[in-house]
Length: 213
Ligand code: 5RP
Image (cartoon, rainbow, N blue to C red; front, side, top):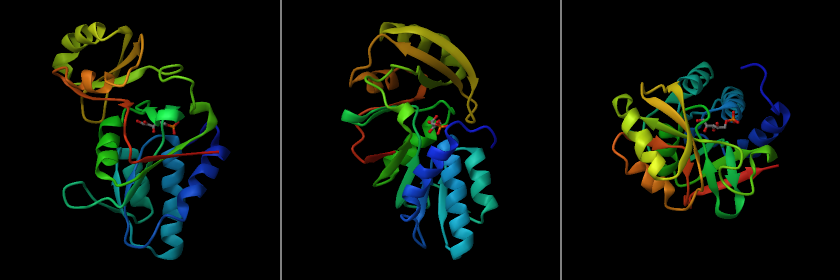
């Protein structure tokens, strides 16, 4: 992966969790550039120390990195995650609220966070905001046939601007949505709309630890 913004900071963030990697671990691997850099560093450690690690990857790109370094690929049916790591697009530190999904992988990322006792969210300072939605729109993955209906319902929840981005790896549509205001029940209310697969809102997750520099 070339042209990664803030590469040095992301490498330093990855270094911060390397000592958590132990032989036999099942690790949830997030997606995006920070997760990619972290996956490569874990891979290098696995090769150097001959570790037996199983990954639950959240995208094809991260799965390929794991395979390249001899990390086994597991799944959420047969494996129990010991810990996970991921990046984020926006972080409101006080409440540990996140927006994720610029890489369109938030459905599998949320599944990993729910399944893992702890997820380390690695973010550089550019991701920290005064309120959620300050810089980023909220990605929403939608069953393709439901795109029109979901867009109409999102407007009732305060969506001011809705852009169609394309398809996810799950062959669903993805919308980027600017909300008038993000309040604590918005994640739940969006998910209640028939046709919504998942949103990039991560509100009220207690089992995450935000690691920054
Ligand atoms: C992908 C994600 C990423 O974690 C998020 O977009 C951050 O990416 P990056 O580390 O490249 O800034 O949620 O769905």
